[in-house]
Length: 174
Image (tube, rainbow, N blue to C red; front, side):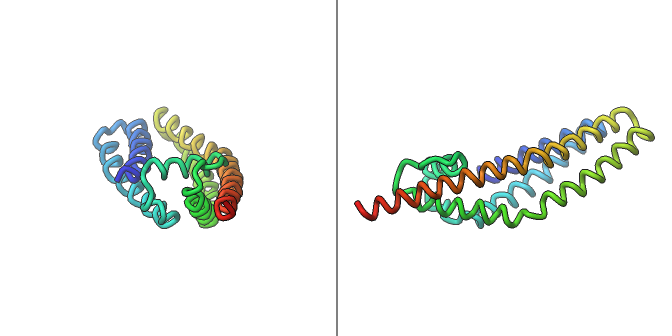
């Protein structure tokens, strides 16, 4: 529940704010938040559960330690959590492979957003044009920021997995 809320609510609020800024409709913004938040929250939580099924068996503090160590490329600090680091790292890799088309989809939507922003600039209100160019900026940010962030997380996950394997070897020898 908390995982879905932490994923869905920011998405709903962001898009609701864009609707409010573009249309000035509080009702429209509220509807967007009420529809998109559960949709993205449920979808995101289910995707994460499929990518890392072992997370259910961990205490919240252990789950947090595994995620933090893997994403930062550090040793998890406890040999008993090393296998969870390996499983979470595999889940990150799997999610990354499944998302290979994502940059192309973002690029397509970026081109469409530029076309809409140009149209709004010449035919719409100033508010519509500003919001449309804000959306273009968000798409461009996604195109430039996300690939670097993902590459860094994947490199860190590999380092954490290497440390986890070393910890498991030492544990089996000791």
